[in-house]
Image (tube, rainbow, N blue to C red; front, side, top):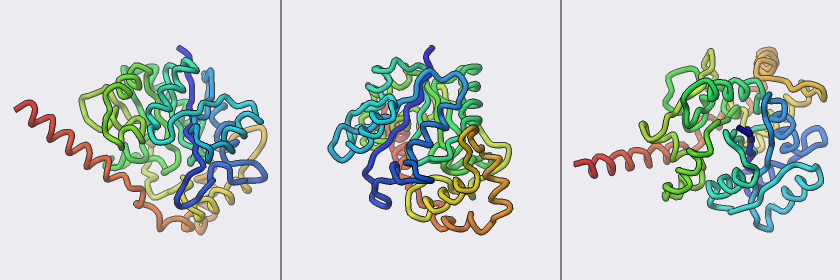
Length: 269
């Protein structure tokens, strides 16, 4: 197996345009995501998957300038883009990261990969975001999102998924309907769903920048535990983006799941 991490990144964002290349300590946010994921043991490749549209040329140029493996594909059919990136770089299993998660934790992703390798999973995800929306406790902070899955599961989703949301969200076809795939979840020891570490707006970026200024080191990535300790001694920082928690728009995926489930039951009848 050749484990590949694929980072989805694009310049377009209605709330914070160009956020993936916004500078933190003089370097683009995407640079830090790439560096952090490279600390995961056992990775053979780290790839940035962006679109082939003119608006994403800055990302493509960034990858060329920094010698980062890159794939450019469909802007809207992100599942197709991810699938073709996986083919080009022969990744299996695959780790999916998004470009709005500058605190992606190499220790957490390493645990995720180990769980995938020792279990009988098609897909396993960190307990945060849409896939953990209704999980009772054990959620990681929003922004530590990561998924690990087989190329076979990705290929089946690529062949079968027809809903626009499933083509946009890449893995939702795999995990949103119980019984379709062998799906697992990596839960946290405590519940951290009250913490938002993703970047979707200026308040998120302000929080992330301040934490980087306090914790960043060239020789070693700071981890989730380091951020938690820092926020415990600076509780005012966590309040910067608290008002945005719960506004992620995950419900439409679960409404789609309910519709699919009703359709399946109707077919069986």
